[in-house]
Length: 90
Image (cartoon, rainbow, N blue to C red; front, side, top):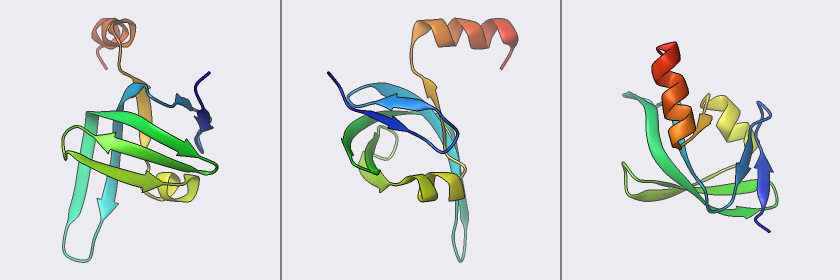
């Protein structure tokens, strides 16, 4: 049985699954935004989640406070979701 992580917006993420994620990071000199890039939930340890970003080729560590502050959201990375987005024009 895989571990689950419940995000601040009540999304349930499963360890080992891939998702599309979006969010933003504000820095001193620049802002960085990403929309629907592929990621994988590598590990869940208590209130921390380790996410591998296929775009950056890096692993990041987050808790719900960081997820909320960066407005990070997740969508399932599967055919059903893709078809729904195409039909709805999302």
